[in-house]
Length: 384
Image (cartoon, rainbow, N blue to C red):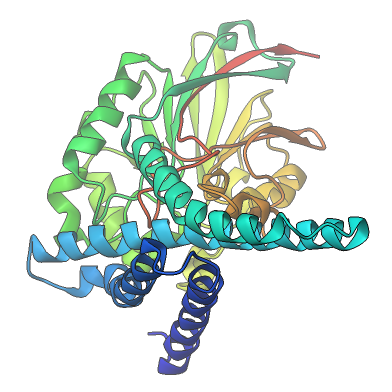
């Protein structure tokens, strides 16, 4: 359990950010403007709703818990847009003041200051509604060809469908999951890879909403590895439940599949930080491939892209990851690289290909901007 001092620091930081936005917008808005009243009322409500929304799953009563989560997390998404645009507005105003000082022409500054204070919340609302649409729609299918040197002829065109970071929880329920499963099955994959963060909540809370996963269908089955949110939600009970649903859970281990006359290794590791929750869950790509046959294609499922360095040393051919959400919405995609070596898409590390999914669902605010969700269809093709 996190210490009270941590929550106090987070709350204090949140209050300061709300004060910053309120002062910057209300002080510049035209006298008597609706912006002033809107900002004051919204910021007060936001200060209450956001913490409630983040902790709503502790409320046992339904549908009250989910409704509070929806309200609080939506407020968080809107405030994020409002904060980013307020910072952007201040940058523009600083630049405009510098230009006015150099040119000696300050006449345009007061109208710019006032009108931009009105434009920020309007644009923030528009972006939040657009982001809500992109978050709640069914993730589109993205097809990626991965060139593999020495690929066996029978593996040419081998198809892996990856889903990641669905985050079944307060705002993502059974219907959302059913649509994802139907889309995945329609692709008729050879193998399904589920690269972690399936759930945000306990088994007792989300049991009925994970049932559609039982219908996932592929020639060689569906494979799963844990993400950090499985550990936040109780990893061991969820691992048992996922196995009951028919997912092949790989815990620093591998299986060998026969596809025609070809053989391939499919391995999976626990989350990069799993060992912090349980020493037995320490992530270990070398252990995952130990004893595997020397074949041209060796696949690793690893929730976080930063497993790639160890995966490359262990001799894997392709790593599939998620975790980053591609940043999910502005401006957070610019900060992901501070923690992860890859943000999204196909990349190369030595002889290892790494594909990082932007995720199939979303976490926290029902918001996606400039980082679309995806169901990824990866096809193996011969490479040099």
